Length: 104
Image (spheres, rainbow, N blue to C red):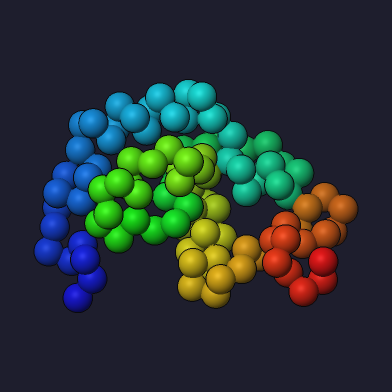
């Protein structure tokens, strides 16, 4: 069982206060940061927690822990990064986007 298994979306912090903060953040940060690092321009639709908050409300609301992502990157690249500990992909020059990649 995870920290969120028995909680509703609102109980996990994603209620109306989050929706307002999310809308403001996306208005100020309209592009997906992962796509940008790869040389692409894609509209962001998700405010992602860089470090998973796992129920920690201080980490949840820390804006320095937020990043704007498109749904594709959030649901694929970010999830692989969380599971493997490295961001896959390369930029327009073919260089790895993860500074910790062994090719750097």
